[in-house]
Length: 139
Image (cartoon, rainbow, N blue to C red; front, side, top):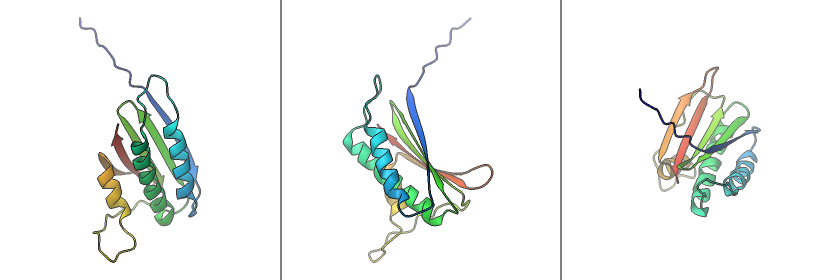
């Protein structure tokens, strides 16, 4: 008989419901910074650069969700010893498009930045309609 040893990963998660308006991205930035800057005993600390990267990702994803979604969006943040996970849910089932960067373009850079900052970036449909956009940052 073999003994199986389970490793319990410590993690903390929070979720926010944000209204469908232009101020939601700013509110999401503040909530993200406050959540990630909190001290957590026995867990890896999220440094200032990682908080900045996560905050930029949250801002871009929430701005896209409120601009292209069909209503409010949900922001879920999770911190573990190894990573910060950002998930944004909206009601629009269409996947976001990463557009090519141009010199004269005034928009369309957000998802390209998110993909550069994140260790992993993916989009998945949500049961009942809509989608989830996830970005994972390594600590």
